[in-house]
Length: 410
Image 1 (cartoon, rainbow, N blue to C red):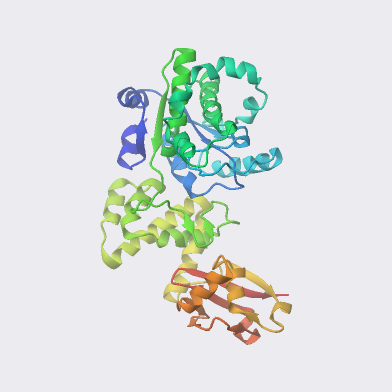
Image 2: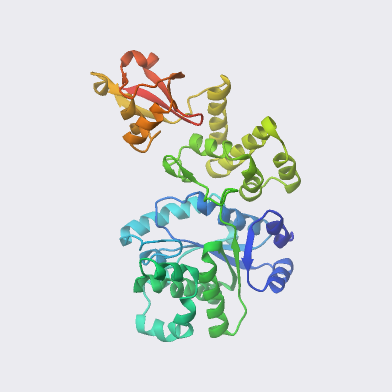
């Protein structure tokens, strides 16, 4: 086994941990079982899940066994961490459908063959719990006063308040850790740094109920050098599902990160050796673009496969250097009927998803950031007619980064 503790440290994953030296020694000397949880609150994982997934993959490559926990039970309650309002209550059917999507996506990063990893759903044990027994066996080990000192509760108490159902979330996640400890010998829980208090809850619950030591480790959240969360685009979140975020848009996001974020992204989101990461991230001026191209390709390959990564790279080259094939650029279909009297440019911008609203479309046009077939259009009342669609296609562009091919169908 390689020294995974040093690998994770060098690549910048580790943010906080319990019992640093014992945990380091455990990872160096033994093959351990660890887990990370994912609540299926949407029908796709997003870029915020990427760091924990990569950490799990590094751990598995070093010989350790991951448990991917899909929170079909905890999603029924909702984690208050980082939320100013209570989550929307989801139906069991929504959660089960989302959980199936998560399981499929996680399998792209983790090898579940030959018992090399385990996938579980906490609905299997949480939904059948006897509430009074749960309070007597588990709730007795938690101090309300201490829970209220944790940021996930404290910020909500000082703001809009915290519902009783959310207050139970920490107990449920802690119980997950205990269940996995008992059933699979799982000694370590990994998660994003916003999960620190929930992880501590599980570590302490195992110590109090089993008299055994368990460990927790959190990872850096994916943020820019200015401290803002990565993965927000003009179209919304950056999803790992190609139907929600196209491979081209996904590629373009990483191709256009800030120069100062290249090293962090290469370190956390690729398997490129660190000496090469250091070399690439030290490039200056125009040369740093080569590092960004490598970053975009490698990350897109991990999420969408090499074939889609090649298509996205080819499409980008076609648009920015006049070479290659632009067929992989995201496209939107409109009907002949929609063009009968012409269609407003601001409507096309909204329909294509290049702007989230018509008001934003107007601003983009007024600011000179909209191009039709590579020509700037500054008239907010511009009407696009059939002659604007040579061969039935139009290339619509917003700014330097966002493109969409509008195609006349039927």
